[in-house]
Length: 289
Image (cartoon, rainbow, N blue to C red; front, side, top):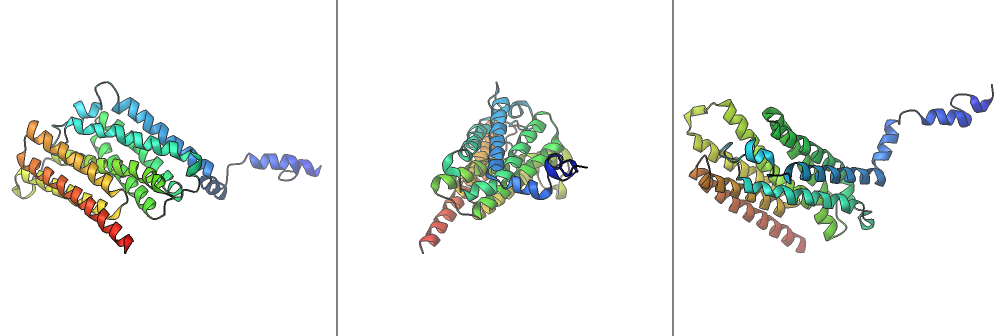
C-alpha cells in the first residue's frame, strides 16, 4: 500500500486526523487564544442586546416588574417599578464591554482575559433567569438568581486579582458587572423573600414586619462585604442603595405599606454609600503611603 494512503500518514492520513474532535489540550489552547475571548465577548454583547430589547425595553417595560414576581407588591422587600429602570444602563454597560474587547487597544488587557468567560456565563444565565421570572417559575428563579450572583462575584474577584492597562481598561472591565452585581444582590433578596412568603411559616412568632426589617439588615450586611472586598465598590454600593430606596418608595407609597421596612431601607442605603466611599478613600490613602 502506498504510504500516502496509509491511515495516519501522508496527506490523506493528515486529512483524516484533522477531522477528529479536538483534544482537551487543543481546546484549552483555543480558549486561551485572543480570538476565542473576542468571540465570547461578542456573545456577551449579543445576549445583553437581546435581553435589553426583548425584556427591558419591551412595551410596558419589564413584564415581571408589572405583573410577575418582581412587581412592587410581591413582597415587602420588592422595590418600586421605577427602580427596575437600572436594567437599561446596566445592560448598555455590558454591551460597551463587548465592544471594547474588539478594539485594538484592548489587546494586552489581562482583565479582559480573566473576566470574559465567567462574564459570558453570568449574562447567559441572567437571560434565562429573566425568562424564568416572567414565566412564573419561582424555584428556578431563586436558583438562577443565586447562580448569576455567584458568577458576577467571581468575575469581579478575578478582575481584582490582575492589574489594568489604564483607567478605561479598569472601568470597562469592572463597572458593568459591578452594577449588575449590586442590582442582583437586591433581586436575590426579593427571590428569597418570595420563597419565604410561599413557605408561610413564622418561626418564634416574631411579627412579620420584624422579619422583613431583618431581611433588609441581611441585605445591608452582604452589600457591606461586597464593597469591602470587590473592585467597582462605588458602583456596587450605589446600585444596592438605588434598590433599597426603591424598596422604601414602594413601602411608603405602595402596597403593602411597611414604614419600618422603609426606614430600615433608607438607613441601609445611606450606610452602604458611606461604606463604599470610606473604603475607596482608605484604599487610595494606602496607595499613597
